[in-house]
Length: 90
Image 1 (cartoon, rainbow, N blue to C red):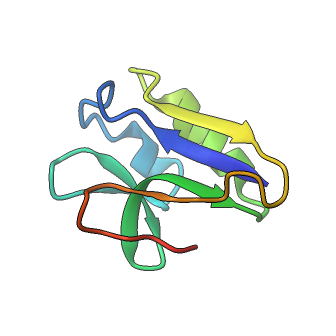
Image 2 (image 1 turned 180 degrees about the vertical axis):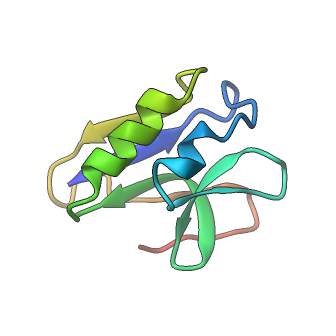
């Protein structure tokens, strides 16, 4: 399992991540977000074979706003919504 986190303070809407991993989208505030189940989040945990895509997106970000880290199964598997009004469940 791995977690993708976007630092909203560092993101400037360059969107180099969007061409590396299609889970990254532009949100209503013009910043990068992660799309999960038709909603957006700034943090999401995945258990799939797409970690390389996420790491390429993180490497492409000129502002180092994207972080990819390993997490243990069941540890911290909570997604943080991109805004206070959205809830995200993987």
